[in-house]
Image (cartoon, rainbow, N blue to C red; front, side, top):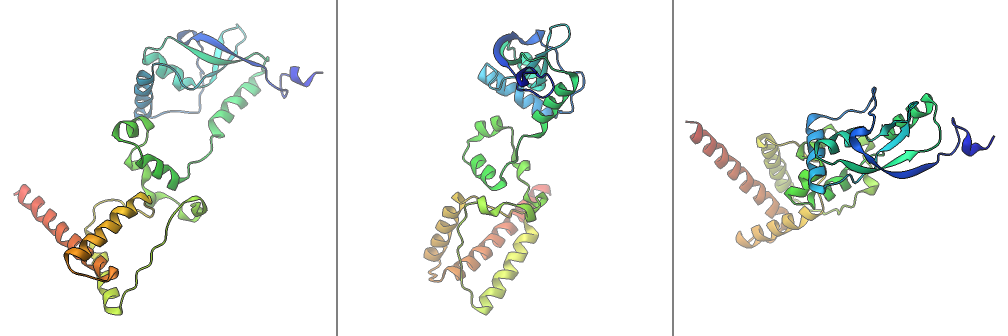
Length: 243
C-alpha cells in the first residue's frame, strides 16, 4: 500500500480552503480550555485584527462536514468578533478516529516553552496597548513560583557588576537591604532586564554627585537609606489618608 494513502500512519494531504466559520463543526470533547480572561482577550485581538492570523485545522467527518481538530477556541472567538469567513487547513487524507484524536492532542501538547528571561525582556519592550494585546500581564512574571533549578541561565543575557564594601559598610548595607525587603509590598524578583541597569547606574551617579560621594559601594548604601526614608514617607502618607 502506498504510505501516502495509509490512513493511520501515512503522510497527510492538505489544502487551504476558504470556509464559513459558523458551518464548521467544533469538537464535542476538547481537553484544551481557556479562562474567561484569555478568551475575552482573544476576541478583542481578533476584533482589532479583523481576521484570523492562525489557521484552524479541519478534517471531514463521516457526513462530509468539516470538523475542527485544532483551533476550536479561535473559531469561537472569531465568530464572536464578527468574522464570518477565514482560511482553514483542510486534511484531505481519510482519518480514523484515533488519528484525529492524536492530531488534536499533539497540537495541544507539543507547543514548546518560553524562556522566562527573554519573555520578560520582550514584554518590557511593549507599550501598554501591545502588552494587553500580548495576553500577558504582570502576574505572569511572578518569579517566586519558578523552579530556578531548571531555569535556563545559559540563554539569559546578563552583565555582572561587582562592588567592594569595607566590613562596616557591608554590615550597614545588609541591614538596610533587609529592612527594605521587610517593607516592600511587591513580589520578589530574581531576574531584571538589562535595560534597567542604565537607570540603576544613573541613580548611583546622581547620588554620588549630590552627596559628594566618591565610592560606588558607599553610594549604594546611601541609596538604601534614601529608599527607607521614602518608604517611611509612604507609610506615613497612607496612615494619614486612613485617619
